[in-house]
Length: 121
Image (cartoon, rainbow, N blue to C red; front, top):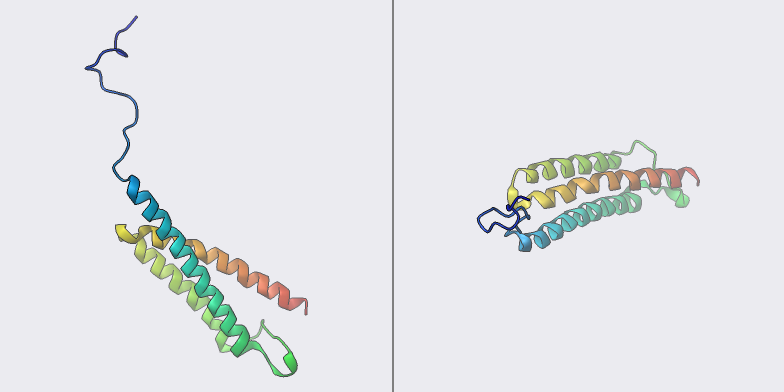
């Protein structure tokens, strides 16, 4: 029987804990912060569009129109993508950039949901 498992000179095969255990909490917080900031930005844009740009007389809601205010949505999406990708290149802010990029599909889901709701009225 080989004696390597009991040999004290044999290197351990168990994974060594990394010294970044305190950084893991910061990474999670930054990701969640980026995600929430992105979702909040999208929510604010939708609220502003619904309140100030889309409502016409007699309470009629028209969302699928060619009003210039609708361009705020793709511009906001492109800004979130550009800032998120830019943050990926800075190690300290990488998690924030990932969270911001993760908020883009959520904004699309909200957008299509609002379009679907407006089609039923």
